[in-house]
Image (cartoon, rainbow, N blue to C red):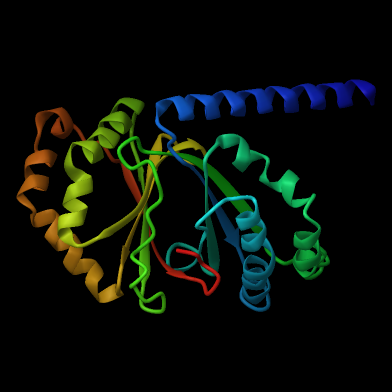
Length: 264
């Protein structure tokens, strides 16, 4: 037993040291944010309401008390699985994100508000599974940018896209394409860019994930058509550096609606 405890303590110490080193490197590089994306797999019935209340009454207020935010909370309108809720948590360091659950367990107000979610019995669980991924903001888009405050949340929708690349070389080239012009092309097409992140830990690597916002679903196809027809995009995408082979092998494309508790 003592050996197991020693090994666990050693691993925890090593992990903490690595996260502190990553945080220091981030600060030196210009204070890019990090993101944790949580995917809550649910079943139809009481689970969506219970998790929605957990977000609104317990988790998001507690994360805000830790200085994290704005927090995004979304339901999937279109995707491979539903019902699915997503939580987007920005932070200034890796350490803040990987230790967030330890700090939640020390927050009495959180524990009281989270009790219905945390103590749900096995026969009637509050969720099916939670999957988490860790991302680093792109150097050229270092901070999460919520839609303008004038935007109406009731109308707003979000598109979260994940690009898988066939190799790390192609992944690096695809990230470079964003910095060589795609940010501006999205803006010209009428999209609002929320974040761009490089996957550090998660499934389907190497990959990147980014989020766009618009006022309505009706706008989505029109804005993408404007993006594809933009002469700057045609020039960039035909550049021999990027066009010699596909830089993206698969796209995961989600359309999301903000929950009432979302700060984005």
